[in-house]
Length: 160
Image (cartoon, rainbow, N blue to C red; front, side):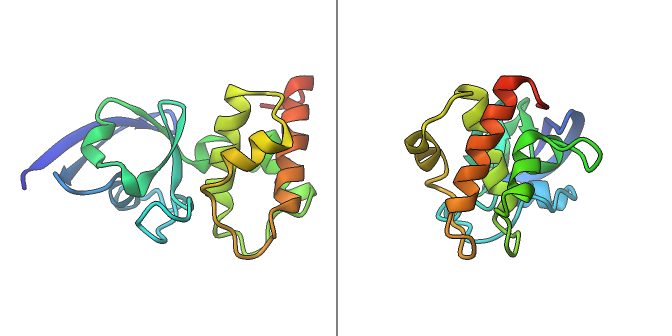
């Protein structure tokens, strides 16, 4: 397979990477130093590698790097900063929705996609949006509460 030069915007910064035809976006992002995109199942089962691709949550392990040519990729680092947390990040912390933290970046990315599309999600909307994010530690209750609280914060204009 041939190598391709792929241009994309990652967290607001233009970047270029050379990737093989069969290389996943997950592998390319990690080679580029974006280790906040977690390498886990590589089969689309866990959601730990979720990123926003032009605003849509996708598992980076299921997207070829070449498919991201010209796209905007947002990882969890592009959602908020230590000094200015996004409401989802703040509420995940405040509601205790973090245990080991491995799945947290993917959950935050999926939750952001949900709230961007639907700022007033029901419990069922949240369940559906996070159905692809596997967490072995929290039991999801606190995560769902955090997403609902973050959506409320966004509706009130408190962050985002």
